[in-house]
Image (cartoon, rainbow, N blue to C red):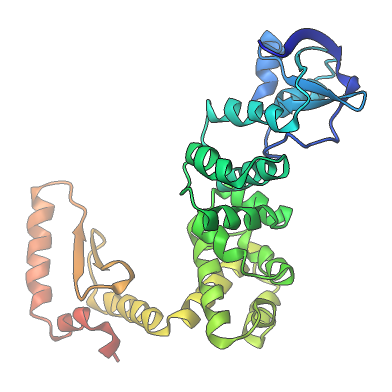
Length: 321
């Protein structure tokens, strides 16, 4: 390999505090442990020397797993290149060859390339294309902001693989607002995290009130102070409350539809569903059938339902009283 030499080194001589070439600090070494025990370190990390000390270029997980197993002498490739910008290409392309980057990792790559002196034009034309992001200046600026988010939020976003759009929205919040949101975000699923960010952003802008003040209002505090609820249940309730506040008509429609479904006494295998987000004046009826007899039974049930006066309310559930 050009500008590299292979050797063995005492693991304690590697300075792990210098993370200038690290792309993601969020990783698990668990899957590596059995492999290292069985076969040893087959893919040596890459290191380089700076100010008379060795630092990691790539192979953070491998090094951490070796430390966990108290392996002191490890094989490494020592890179001789003196330019941080050129060295940083090693972890960029090594990772690109085996997996896709999360949006958080893309932000790190873009920001570090800029810090190492890569021209914005080259970052946009070459690297953003490699990272599969739109090669535009405003997108680059957005990723630079994303990389400045606090570590807790970035860890959630990395783990749940947040979209660029969700991350771009959250960069509009202040640090204090993000701190207020964090306890609820970390408990929700990916889809609900996205909805929570979108809903609270929309509500705070419409009402011209900070996220922190919004989450300190009486109705939110009432949920937060319910001792019988777990942190997950509180997050779910906050999510539902925000959804109602952002679109009260939509929430009322959903509740009315549930109420109406109950009154119709539908069989278990029959489900009535509105169009997604109620964007169309249509409903779908889903049947789970095992055989022809069940089909006949449900056809008869549909005929029976069609004669009921309240069936028309399925197409306008908000008129349900």
